[in-house]
Length: 581
Image 1: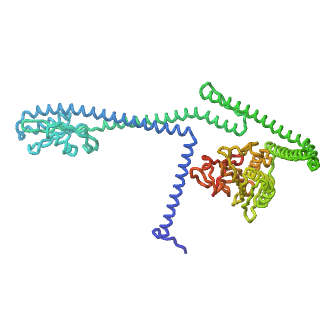
Image 2 (image 1 turned 180 degrees about the vertical axis):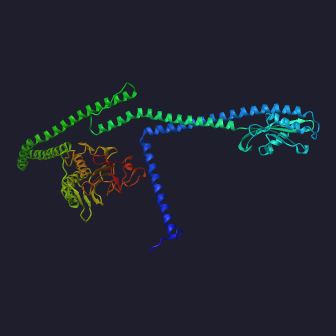
Image 3 (image 1 turned 135 degrees about the horizontal axis):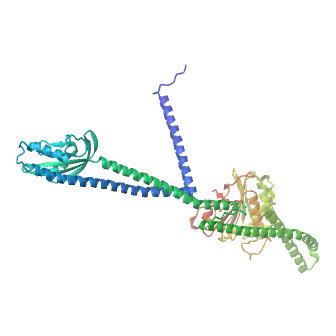
C-alpha cells in the first residue's frame, strides 16, 4: 500500500516549489513572447505607431484639461459655499450681538434662554432638524454658559482646537473637516466668528455640510472623464482612419514594388482621384513603365550581345582551325627559314594560341550568360588538384623567376566539387599571381573545416590600389594595362573563375595593398548544396601590416578604409564571407 506524503513534508514542499518555478517560467516566457510580439508590431506597423502616439498624446492632453476643469468646478462650488456661509455668519454675528447686548452678566436668568432662541433662529427656527446647517454658540468655560447647538448634536469633534483658538483671538476663521454629525459621516465647512458682549466674548459657528457640493463635483468629474475618454477614443479612431487612408496606398505600393522586383514588370497601382496619393500612384506607375521599358531594352541588348558573342565565337572557329593548320606547318619548318621569317612564325603561333584561348573564354562566358553552365559535382581530393596546377604552371613560373610554394595538408581534403572547374579557377588565380609576382614567391594554401574548404593564392607583387579590388573581377579589366604580358591573358579569367565559384555556391574574394602584394581566396562548401557561413582560411595574410592598427582577422571593414582594400564576392544572392582567425 502506497501512501502520499503529508502536506507539510519536505517532498510536498519541494513539489510546490517546483510547480511555482514552472509557473513562473511559463509566465516569464509568455510575457517575453508578448513583449516581443508587441515590439515587432510596433516596428512593422506605421498605423499602430501613429494611433498609439495619438492616443497617448491625446490622453495626456485631455487628462490635463479634465483635471483643470474638475478642479475649477470644485473650487467654484467651494467658493460659493464659503461666500454664502460667510454672509450668513456676518448677519448671524450681528444679530447675536444685538440679542446679547441687553445682558451685562453671564449669570442673568434669561441669558441661556436667549442663547437657545438665537441659535434656533439662526439655524432656521426648527430645533428638531438633524441635517443641514448646524449653528453652535460656545463660550469660555469660566463664564458658566453652556454651549448650545441646533440641532442638538455633538459638534466639538468638528471644531478643531486651532479653529477655536483663532476665533477666541477675535478672528473670523474657517476649516473643512470630515466627521460624523447626526449619524452621517460627511465633509463640513466650519466657519467661526467672535460675538462680543458686555460680559465677555461668545463664539458663533456655522457648520455647513458639503455633501451637495461634493456630489455636484463628483458628477462634474465623471462627466469630464467620460467626455475625455470618448474624445480620446474618437481621436484614436480618427487617427486610425486617417492613417489607413495614407498607409493603404503605401502598402499597395510596397506590394507592387515587391512584385516588380520579383520580375512581374506589368504590375501597376490603381489611380483614384487627383490628390497627392493619386499623384504618388501615377508617378509610381510611370516609374514602373520606364523601368519596364529600360529593362526590356537592356535584356534585348544583352541577348543580342550574348548572341553576337556566341555566334562570332562559333563562326571564328572554322577560319581559326584553317589558319592554325597552316601556322602549325610554318612553325614546324621555321628552322629552314631565315631568322626574321622564323621569328615571325613564332609570333604567329603565340598570337594564335592567345586567339584560341580568347575564343574558348568567350564561349564559356556565353554559356554562363545564357544559364547553360552545369555543375558536375563529385567527391574530389583537392590536394592532387593543387599539385597538378602548380606543376602545370611551373614552367611559366621558372621563366619569370617566381617560386611556387605549397602549404597543403598531408591527409586528403575531400569535397563535393566539379574538379574541372576548380582546377580552372586555380589556374587563373595562380597564373595571375605568377604574372604579377615581381619575381617573388607565390604561396598556395589549402585548408578545410567541417563545413567548407578554402584555397588562398598569395603573391608579393605590386598589389592592388584602393578601389581596384572592386574591379578585379570585371571582364577585360587589368590592374596595369601597360604591364608587359607574360601569359597572354584574355582578361576573362577572373570573371569565369567568379562564375565557377558562384556555380558551386561558394565565394571568390580578393585582397590587396600597394607594395604588399595580393591574396585571392576561394571558399567552397564541403558538401554540394550547403550554405557557407565562414571560411577556414583568413583573407588577409598574417604578415600584412594593416593601416590604423586594424585587426588581423581578415575583417573586410578593417581593411577597406586605408591603403589596403578588400572585396567579398559571394554567391548570386550577395552574401559576404565571415572570416575566422
